[in-house]
Length: 467
Image 1 (spheres, rainbow, N blue to C red):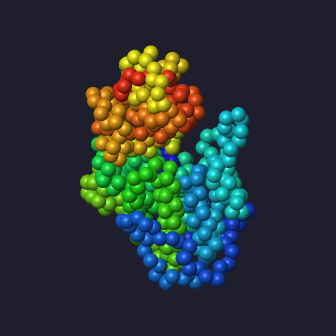
Image 2: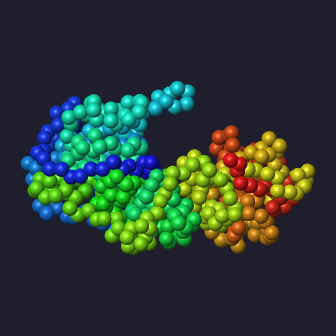
Image 3: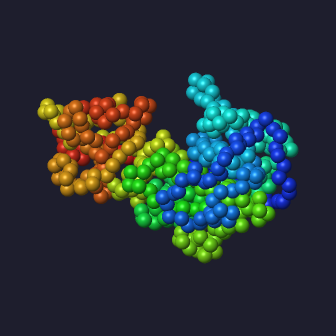
């Protein structure tokens, strides 16, 4: 359910007291004694802090006699492993006593090949034998009543897992469970906050200005609650996207920082539990953060980031999202790395397809080959022209073009492919014709058709893709 793709919520829980029992299990992985328990392994973030983890009351070095935490970790993909590595470092430092890992089992891919999750690979490399979810309905309930029956943990950590945590699992965690979410909550609750940050889409507005969209970009560590991504906030930082960020690079950066903040929260939890203080006493309600992110003071203005699908990549020149060069670039950066891309159907836009240019330059027009007429073109990587006045003359002088017109410039061996938006040109660096693999621009231009001297605007149009 989240992008990191899976932000989870449980079905309700409360803090509970009780003795700290040592889990006797082949899944438990004890920390090796460390002469120094300094937090040097925690690297500082570069974002703007909104909610900070309080400093340790007992000084920078905890007493080695204090028991480390028993952690139940639930994750799936490479986003999850960023946090798992931080937990392993905390285990080495003595803050965590044991880590039990729950992850999906191997999945069948094309050709019948079985593929294990990134979390399973990481756990085995750390010397932890993970609990793999069985097939069938309610796999977590099966695990809770089976291999983990009777187990007790101090805290659960859930990152990009893809499953709702049942009460049976949450009840095993004395301090409940915490989750990492890649947005500045309560902004962009839901499955795909990083995608919607880059798109600039944010309910109730269809498109946010870049500055406003950036205000929602960040990472939050929160308590798991019954309502989706609505738990109290334990740590939060704002991280402004860079001009070159796509969904992969921004997700990776937020995942790394989310793992570090999670480890900081657990170090503080360990100290508080050992001293008899309430768990998570510094947590902040999301309603108190609403005004900062543009929501009303009652917290009712939270925004959502629903899961994206192939339909979200369909070109629509009638919307703000795709009409401008900046909007199209943001859309491609958000959807390209996901395999969705931004897509339109190739159609002849007019001109004399029989005309031929016999020079060493591609004409600004291109006749569409019959084999790709009506095919779908997926944009994977594009960039807006920094200076529209410094474009090749045949583009700079073009007038009256319809949004979605493609043009080719440059020498035969190194052609450049351009796309006209409502307010300027973007250069296409990578694209793909439906049914074919990704191609270089020279390969793509050759696949599209023959050269035409019919001038700018006569190449191709990218109409909205069909359903």
